[in-house]
Length: 167
Image (cartoon, rainbow, N blue to C red):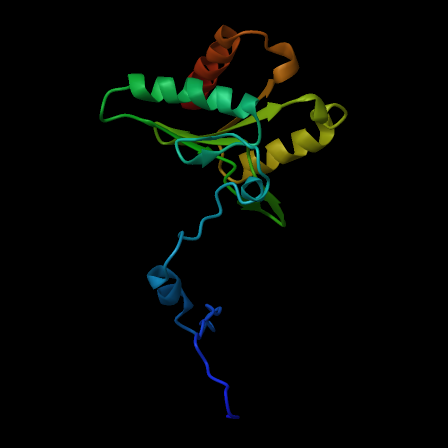
């Protein structure tokens, strides 16, 4: 070093570790949030509703979730409803994110919340529903938000969905 020069501070920047064959162990022992595929799309977009550490695309999905959560709380301890919003699902060459994947009494069902953006997509929606059914989902139902004007209608939809899922 030349005269009059000194190093007063050294700052180490974190680096991305190189992943080897034991990458699963490396991820499990790493600091920070654990990897998850739940809501991977909406996590990147601010302003989407979050409740109970779950992410939703919009308020309509959150409303249906709240009704299902109420039904969940009213059940006895040895019975429950599993509610998974926006879980990624790979089905024969396609990856989908059903709005709500519901498990109840040993069955799996899908609830799709259809807003104005679904107009003109009935054929595509029907094909997607058929893929869910072919993958083992027992029941698929759609709630058209343009036809819902009260919480009572959402409750009636949720109750009907749970009844048909377990029939």
